[in-house]
Length: 525
Image (cartoon, rainbow, N blue to C red):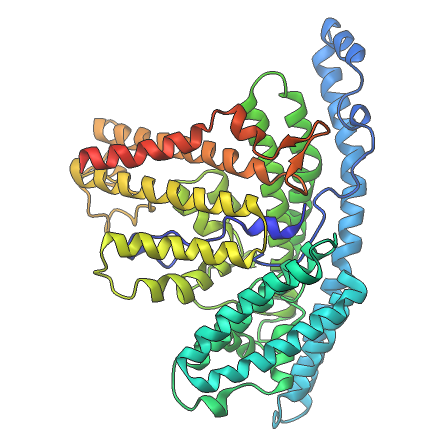
C-alpha cells in the first residue's frame, strides 16, 4: 500500500464557522505489509480440518485463542523489526541535525543562518537517499525547477496563482510522461506532493504583503525548507515561517524523549493492527458479514495511515520541529498529525475528515477553502463550491488515481449532505445534533444539549441516541469508502474483480444514503 493513499481523506469540510480551527500528506511511501508471512494458513489459524477439531474439542475456544496468539506473534516480530530498520536511521539523523543546530547556535553568534539551512538540507538528503536511493536525483531536479518557478512571484498575487497551477500540473506531467509505467513513482509522488504543498504555501505567503523581492528565500534557505529531515520523507506540510522559527531547538532533550517514547510505542501498535490483527479478523469474519470484512480491511488501511502519521510525529519531536499555531499539539505526543480516536469513533464525517491529517487540513483551509469562500456571509452555493474545489485540489495533489478521486468526491457529497441535514435538525428541534462537536455547556446555543441536561432527562437520551446514530452511520461510510483503497492497483483478487467490488456487494448503499440525506434536507428545510 503506497503511503499516498493514506491522505485521500485529508481534505477540508468545515461548514460551521465557529469550529474551523480544528486536516501524509504527509508524504512518503511505505509498504503497509511489513514482514507478511507467505502462507495464509500459517498466517491465521491453520487448515480447515484443524479448525473443526478445535471447535469440537471442549477446550476449542482456548486452543483457538492460543493459535491466534501464536500467529499474531509470528507476524508481529518481523513487522516490527522491518519497521525499526526503516525508521531508526531517520530518528538518528533528526537528532543529529538538532544537535548540530544547537551546538552552532550556542558557540557562535547567529550572524548567518546558512549553516543551519545546510545542516537541515544535508540530513534530509541522507534520509531520502536511504528511502528512495538513486531516484533522489529526480527529486533534486524537481526541486531546482520549483525554485525557478518561485521567481514568478515577482509578478505579484497572480504569480502565486500561476505557480500553484504549474506546480500541480507538473506533477501530472512527471507521472504521465516520465514515470507512468514505473512502479516506483507512487513513492516519489508522495514526497513530491509535500514539496508542491510547500511551494504553493510559500508562494501565497510571500505575496500576501509587500517587499516581495527582498523576502524570496535564498537557495540555502529554500533547500533547507524543502528537504528538512523532519518532513522530507514522511511529511507533514509545515509553513516556511514555522520552519524558520524552529531552526534553533528550544525544547529540552528530556521533553523530547518523554514525547518520543509514546510515539514509538503507538507506532508499533499501529503497524501491528495494520499487518496482523486487522487481516486476521477480516479473514475470521469473512463468511459471516460483508460489512465486517469491509470494516477490518478498511481498518488495515487506516492503521497504515496512523503508523506513518505517528512516525512523522516522532520525527517532528526528534527535530524539535513545531507545526503552525492552528495545528493541535499534545503534551504527551507533541505535534499531532492525526487523531485516531476521533476517526474510529467520529461524531460526523466532517469531524473525521478534519482529524485524518491535521496539517493538510490546515493547508487546504488556508490556501484553498478560504480564498474560494472569502466572507462569512457567503451563500450556500458559494460554500458548496468552496468545498468541492478543496476536494478537487486535494485529488489533483494525490496524482492520477481514480480510486482517490471517487473516495474524495464521495466524501465531499456525504459530508456536505450530513452537515446540512444535522444543522437543519438542530435548528428545528433546538437540539445539539450538529455535525461539529458541542462547544460545552457555557457556549452551546441549543437548549436541548446533554451538557445542560441530567441523566434522567428524556431530551438528554434522545440527543445522545441521535448523535450515536450519526456516529454509527459515519463508521459505515468510513468502512465503505476506505476498503476500495486496499491494494496497489485498480484490480483486486486473482479473478480480476474491479476495485469497486466491495461497493457492488454493498449495493452502493453508502451513496444511496448520501443521496437520501440531501432529499431529506430539502424536504424539511
